[in-house]
Amino acid sequence: MTPRVPRLSSLWAIMKKPRAAVGRRAAVGRRCRKQASSQAGREKHALNSSQANPSVPDGLAKRQEEVVLQASVSPYHLFRDTAEVTVFRESLLSWYDQEKRDLPWRRRAEGEMDLNRRAYAVWVSEVMLQQTQVATVINYYTRWMQKWPTLQDLASASLEEVNQLWAGLGYYSRGRRLQEGARKVVEELGGHVPRTAETLQRLLPGVGRYTAGAIASIAFGQATGVVDGNVVRVLCRVRAIGADPSSTLVSQQLWSLAQQLVDPARPGDFNQAAMELGATVCTPQRPLCSQCPVQSLCRARQRVEREQLLASQSLPGSPDVEECAPNTGQCQLCAPPTEPWDQTLGVANFPRKASRRPPREECSAICVLEQPRARGGARILLVQRPNSGLLAGLWEFPSVTVEPSGQCQHKALLQELQSWAGPLPATRLQHLGQVVHTFSHIKLTYQVYGLALEGQTPVTTPSGARWLTREEFHTAAVSTAMKKVFRVYEGQQPGTCKSSKRSQVSIPASRKKPSPGQQILDSFFRPHIRSDASRLNGTAQ
Image (tube, rainbow, N blue to C red):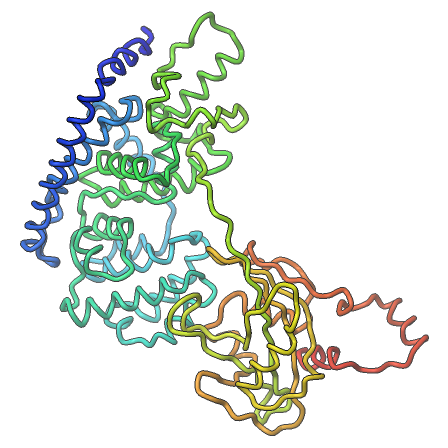
């Protein structure tokens, strides 16, 4: 086999134009993009959201964008001929036909003849799967489709019902946006879901580029590519893209590759196959390269083989494996020199991990206020969050933002409680423990308090608050963090929440249940006096 590195080097020599030529090319690119943008604006008015032909090409603007992108990167990272693309499509789809998982949204979409219902089934699944694992979504999806099998059913539901079913799934704005979109389709679009990725993204709230492409390709057969986290990983490894995938240039290149690869005959299956490959084979850690249907086209795998040969020095000279013009520092899709190859990672060197800003830390004092002897059974107080912002519209225990130092927590929380429930005994407000829960951008520490009211006289309930039984609480629209808070109140043992690895519970050592032997010693040396804290635990059993 003749080494191909010299050929690539010559290609690089051709691409290395004088700066003046580069400037002229950039100016031409800008003029082309401007013209394409104007053309795209004129074409928008002629596009009907319910009747647009799924086979219409993406347009002049995207073609010009691809030309500019390809001029700025090495051909090593591209699919340079139709034969490679054809092999990739056929290999991936053949594997998918044999290995795809049996998932409820796939069954529903495949068996649904009504296009609007099919689009709705795909839409719900794609929104739920954002930032959430498949295993978690399955039960939520099944319950959702049983309760609201059509867009019309969802459009007529209340936000309270939507939040209640979504509770525990996280990223709660997704459910709200999904219902807003359903109402827009029913009330403004005559019940017809837009048929193309462009109109889906433009007309429906909460539908971004990925979700629009997924719905358009799976439900309507539009030949449009999609890029999610799994596809990013697959494409970065297949084409050895080591630059930051969150950067604008790399993101554009990935979308261009996805569009180039998508099978026009089976676009929905192809997109699902690419995502399935990333989820089950080309995983973040310990990928199963031996089971990969496209390993013969994977440049990351070739790089691993090259590095292994160099390390073993079993062959003289450079190994016969193609690489991207080494040491030029000019390819914008290669990893920067500051990110050397890690032999222990193998193909997991790709994609490069984007640097993330750590979540900001906040602290909140929160209280479970209970009427243990209320008529009809014990009741706990919940208040509703604002209709916008974090956890919008959900119910929670009364809380107040405090300083992490703990100063004035007790006083500030008591004032908040009294604004909801009237005068309360300050001495009965007891600190029980803490819950740490990390949202997408906030690490929130809840300092958990408890207060049990005496007597059977019901407390006046202001607007925005409600008293619920324990059973009602567990089925209400409350977040996972609130359920963790309530577990602290109930006196359960500390530990990590099984449903969320990012949430921890801790109970002060003074409140942990002593061993039987310690209980005997305690009762021997002092009389048993029931404290307010132990009474709270007793009423919670």
